[in-house]
Length: 286
Image 1 (cartoon, rainbow, N blue to C red):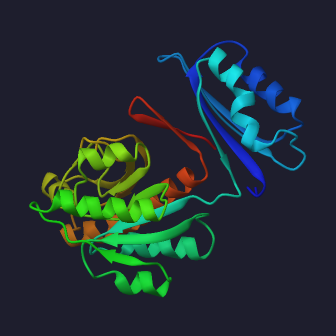
Image 2: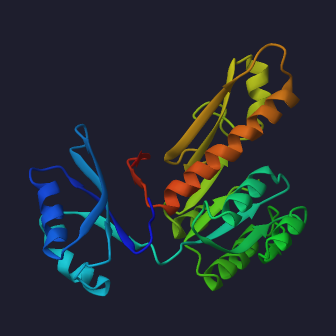
């Protein structure tokens, strides 16, 4: 389904009777043609979550007046909400170190239009991936990070991100831990790929530890980054079977295939406004 000339509304609020009707009737008042609607109730948290997308052709409410018009319903039901327009492409920055497989995959999907975004900047702590960025015509900035200059390095990164007006940051095997101060600037707007099926084998060298443990499945996990390492809300996961014949190099090779796919799915779902995060978990709307 094309997202052109559409708006998408994401809603989270305490569950109660009449929520779907209230939202639908509001949109109908302004002649909205709903393209897609999906909802989820969490009975444990007494929480209602919804995604609704509608065609803006014929929609009689100017979108710059949407917030004021929707405010009474939002206040009545204690809603947290956000609305996005398809005509505005999100601006995505990519952080990468030396491993290029996830970057290659993201840039390929971006170049063929699968990821509907702009990529104004790629930031790295190594020179290794510069040729890929230059091939795609994307500015590539190398900012070395050490334990002694981390604050200074992140300040330079912030400056680049602010200048590029970035909405989303993707860590495509960026082998540095972001500071709490950095993460707090971009809540639920930093996506990481971790090379294990979290919560198993978080932290460094998960494939080596998986091999030492003798597991029969390895996986990859894409998640939002929080101040706690590898503990943010999980967006997507995938696994593949291994055997006693596989050594660490085999695990790494098989895992890289998972990492590419899992990261690209998570990024695409975020760009399409399909994710709502709450209580350190996520709902992914179809």
